[in-house]
Length: 209
Image (cartoon, rainbow, N blue to C red):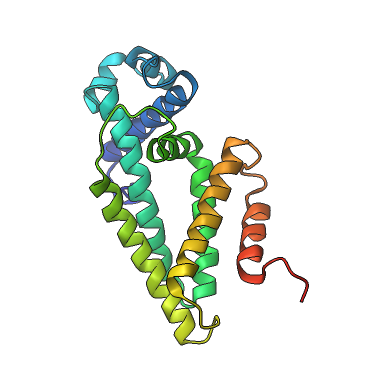
């Protein structure tokens, strides 16, 4: 994901057009399915001419691939930025979780497309290969693992198995946010409520102490 603020005017406009095409395509893929959505549909939805679409993508498969890879790249950039701006584990997890929720809400259709692709629920018009996903996921897990171990060493959290905690975090946060997106109960007006709930369960559990 490019930093739009560091680009020149023409580059910003090009990136914005590309993102608009991706967003329109993701919505149509979700609504009509990849097979039934056409490039003409995408052009109409994004309010660009079909020629403009071809300036950025050769076909639907290329658009689909770019959507999936963009989400993976963005998540990696989010966690990298969070790592550089936080110190302790708790502050890191709070900031990262909040950023993930906001990003997922903003990119709802794109995120659900990624989830359906990697869970085998939706169509797979392109083959990304597990290497693409695994490499980026390993980098993300590497940051989380390092922060968890640091939290244990500094006695910010009790001495628990870092790998188990990593799995708990992943299985709590990401399925929760994607399920709530599917149910259409998570939106820009109630993100903090959901983020605070997830973090409270993560840090405090459900028992009255």
